[in-house]
Length: 143
Image 1 (cartoon, rainbow, N blue to C red):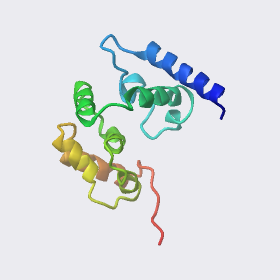
Image 2 (cartoon, rainbow, N blue to C red):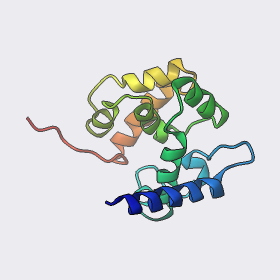
Image 3 (cartoon, helix red, strand yellow):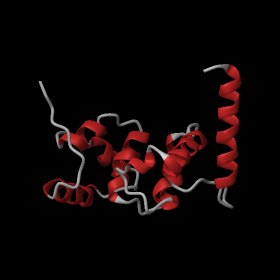
């Protein structure tokens, strides 16, 4: 990409953010903005969901940990199916493999519980039920 295109993209994202700001100066969490788009739907990677996620990431990228905690507490309860996304935002990169393979300790979810953003036992119950009923995207580990 060239510098001119980068500037145009940045201006477009700023415009989206300005349009979407709440009176409190926030962008709504994705599940509040588009509750009709399921968590693992392609709708977050194309169309209006993708546009919103690009704007949300840009809007939130300079938030520190405490700001994120305060922000998400404002919009609690956080749907169980979005906790992996939140854990990833807080720096737990292993959550992706854990969610798709079922392996791991889910340390990112436990961390969210410490922040007052999740209940690990509720997550664990939900997760086991989703996997048992084949409602979770899965991958198998090879190696």
